[in-house]
Length: 473
Image 1 (spheres, rainbow, N blue to C red):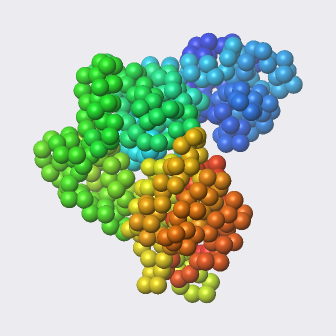
Image 2: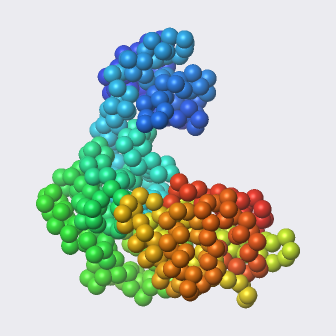
């Protein structure tokens, strides 16, 4: 395996000084002693609740090749025989290493943000670009002020493409990260009511997302969703940042990458995509209109960096959803028969909740099966929370879900309004709702599970997978 960093490049980049016998090369970078791999550089970052310096011993015992430590914690490191590189600030040192990684890289860089679809779009880009070169991208959702510099610092010098998801829940968070990444293409998936608890309105969210234009390469390209109500506003913001070229995607007529004749099927989707006036029939390996949108964004971004679209379109036909983001299971019942489960448990906001309910509406059910929605709170909605939860009555009803299981403090508002239309089971938490769910499942049912991440609806998924045998994905 080719080394990620050598000793001199590392010390120079982070402006530190060495103590002990520093290895000549390093194979990786870690900020978490639990997932550290032998040979990694371990950055002892101080977080809001935990301090990496307190885990330095564990990191060294797990095989860290060198520890990056703050000078004001040096005395605490005396009991450790590990090689050290001492810096004034560990997070700033990681950012400096990220800057060095970007400076040495010849990769084409794409940065992705938006209220919904960021991670899926990033994962699809990662998959399709791997068919034409070496790709580096965020692991999971490492998209914040730690995750982005960590991902950039981890980028191998031989990478052909870099894909960086950049998230935020406050203004001024995207700006420094995109300037670090300095992409050739920026992509905004959609503006919607996510993190409304930290903003006055959707326009403020659009402004925060538009910070991504500020780090774009001078000759860079912006890729925007023409179906988004904020499309004209984002075009204006891009032009204010001197973006010279803007590409559009969507179902809107005359989009640069337009979807037509869409067919939303149980297991996949198909469409005609118009690219520069030429129509191409294509299949997408996962169901859902939101996947159509994500795929159009991917096609546009790949075209923008000059990638041959033939392998891209072919690869999209093989795309499959990720854990917590739409993956589907077929499970057998001990008494005979089977049921289906759509795992949308990773996170939730009003737009992604509607997309998941759309998946439930077109998903497979048996002859006597039912569509069952299992929904938890959508968090970080602030004063808008009650209204946005109540607004789910129509989407839930149109999905055909009956019965519906709801849990969490805010879902009680939906439970009250929805009870006039379908059978509703409500409980305060997962521990109380899970037995009700288990008692209800029968042959042919289709379950869809979704909530904000910190409600741990993934525990319901785990409980079902532990209890019932998976027949197939």
